[in-house]
Length: 336
Image (cartoon, rainbow, N blue to C red; front, side, top):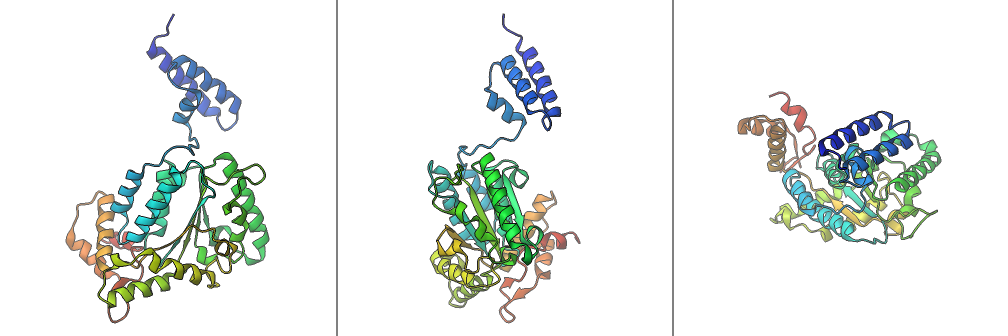
């Protein structure tokens, strides 16, 4: 005798809702409830049904490269290098069924150029809940590692946190913000996890992703961009090879980079140093326009121009680049 599908669906829903209430306390009860719901519906596997109601780690889920490309091209302005390299790096890494090491990216540039925004885009394309996901972990140097005298404690805590979370989800994402404010030595605690080991204490880290965000190297990036501009060349002519080696050496020798004399660089464990170029007036206008669209406001070109013109630009004579990028666009738009 076959159950009425409507009855089965309703019963399954009731069981799942009941399971949700006790999820934090009784995992065995959750398993029984979902198992019963699966039996009632007869359509979904235990895991598929569970993952409809709770976040699951799907490390093997393929990356939608087209969606990532669209997000980067439509939401990130003036960063052709970052768009190209991040798309290439993530696509290649996720398509590799047996990577030899975790993917490690180091994003560099002045504040407001899009580094944090890109890390958010990457997180959302890897785990649907993005930065709110249980499998995406954000560390802020001044918040999580503030005291120089506690470096050893931070190193131990960081190792335990990464080990525990990768054990739970092989495809975990770890984002380290304000690397330029991180005390030298702290980040070297994660060196074993970024290396070419098959396993460490029974845990494989090869499918995890590590992203560093830093203002360090912003001066080197700006100098290169200015050299191209003064030579009459387009910023889009700047290639990764024009900056990556300079960034790597500059950050390694910068006492305020968080990667000063770091084994991560010395051992070539960072896969890409990605430069974020300083933003021009036209890019600031793009940011204002995008923010107005996100707010559901009518696009007013007069307001866009006025907000962009309120920003300050450098160098003193040429006034080419916004000194805060697009960082204060949201607050300035509040006045209109």
